[in-house]
Image (cartoon, rainbow, N blue to C red; front, side, top):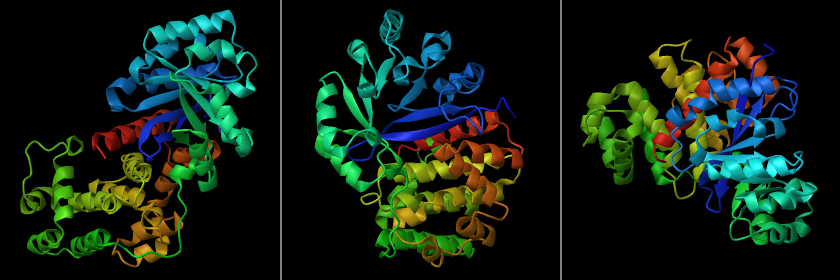
Length: 404
């Protein structure tokens, strides 16, 4: 398993928490701490050739960007040019000495359409040589005093540069970054919102819960249709999603009854699951919605070789609903009291155990770039790194195709 190389990713967001891109991390083993294989260029090369090289075809980023960490060896390598230029930002690590050769290489890559981000230039001697090449500057806010953040921002901000605050982990830090002037952000604060102890479920969520329960009880289509008709917004959302490119239907679905007759119970369950996390669009951060939907697809894909269609639908539900506590801002056990789900789904959501649990655990480990845990779970499920990475990128592509 020494040649295993796994991809991790973290979203980069604007002030409204809309995702503008992802930073991709490559690690080659459970013991690797550096994200770019400081001492294992071969593993990094394998990931780029076998997985990321296909990104232009299979990862439908739209206007999203891929931020790639590069060390000196990788920067000089032609492998970088496997990446689609218009979607790729090369993040120049602070460990790189800005020699004439490095400056020329950055200029050459920019002339091909690649963008350049400087990683913590305030910690890199001679970084001013690369500033004319910079499209982005990333500041690790854990490396500076919050009181000094404004000065750091002013030092590197320019009309041609977008400033990114990274490792934003608390609301206090987020507010400090906004006050300093940052407009792009990265960190666990956005992917893992605080879960509160109680909340009132709004009417849209309540409608979805009601319909979900009817579907799980095998209610007639006319009963389910009546549930939709009581909430015009939900009916609209369902039809919009059914007719989006992500579902791949050959004809346009124009009525709820038509949708129900085409889809069947399992597929309807999947869409209701999506609606569960998008019904409260005004209050749910877009990054959280995207994360939960990507989770669902990744969990499903990881179990593709193990399960039949019905179980894969359940895996999808497990992945999406694993963030319902954050979406609804209430403990997951209270959420599950309101939904009638199959017992293995409930078990996975509450304990991460049972037949679906390990697949959700692997999805969460991929999300966190937890190398040791990814390796352990991949071995348990007999999945190699190329398969995990392919599933990961495919899940991102699918979530993007929904247009959420």
